Image 1 (spheres, rainbow, N blue to C red):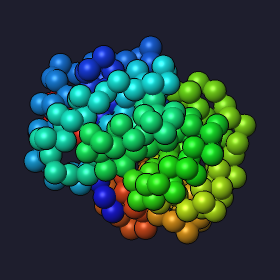
Image 2 (image 1 turned 90 degrees about the vertical axis):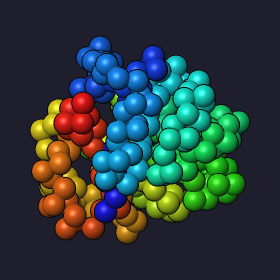
Image 3 (image 1 turned 45 degrees about the vertical axis):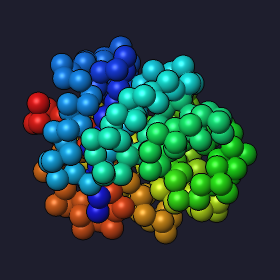
Length: 226
């Protein structure tokens, strides 16, 4: 099970959001590069970087920062937020990112998702952000009316290699994992999944027993580090 450090970045600063609410944004004092340097020696296995501005604007501009982060770590980098077309996906991958994460576009533009899977089969991940059984899009502001079970069935059929599932109700709260939710997700598809939302370091031992591909820790690892 991989332990992935989740970094949400807004206005070139790492920020803390609660349940994805952009109005709750709390910036951390240190520059993202300095935080990445510290995390790189902390024992984590990979970085998940999210462009919060890109999530809401639909267009990422974080290319230079991604290149800087790539220079200071050899660990895998997953990046999402504002990847809505093929050209942007290519440009992000050219920065040295290992996998790009599609969220809103994976729901609304499955032709794009399939096209990217055909061209970059091992470099595509899909984020499913879930609240009360439904997948949400556009920065968690809109209910897609697609259930998580239906969405996962679709992703399994088209062979998405990496699926990241966030429990919106817990994200940024440090309240711990909903283990019943995790067990049910594991029963829905044969593929390994990555879990995100409210995870604390004290959850890791139990999560290791649950046949997960990985977990994303954000707030808890930040605050302890800084």
